[in-house]
Amino acid sequence: MEEETEKKIPDKVLGTIGLAMRAGKLVSGEFMTEQAIRDGKAELVIIAMDASEGTKKKFTDSCRYYRVPILYVYDKETLGQSIGKRERASIAILDRGFAGSIRKRIGGMNNG
Image (cartoon, rainbow, N blue to C red; front, side):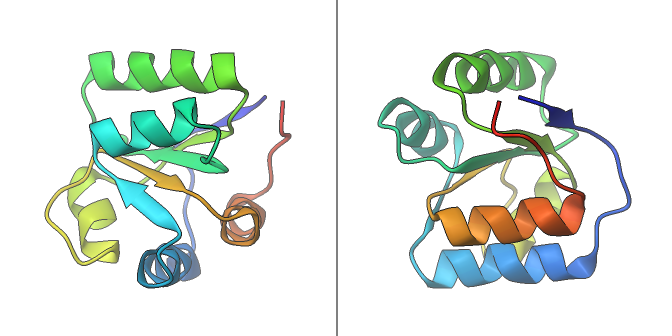
């Protein structure tokens, strides 16, 4: 599994995240993201670059253990705005198609 870090992210990625939210194929917040990973529902986890180091470590470890791709992009405010909510440090994409589209637009990753 590769980890993507700081890159210039296309605006279309935010649109895809918003579409996933409206389609009910996304959960946000630490508890819901963690639960989606453990339940095997998360196809992709996105963590804000300005999340705390503890949050980043927790999700890095969890995603590595459950073999879920993880990206570190945007900031909490941007992630929250993309789904019509307040600041969000973590989101999980629950649909393989949306996850694939986001990963492709960011530059691709291996499933690990």
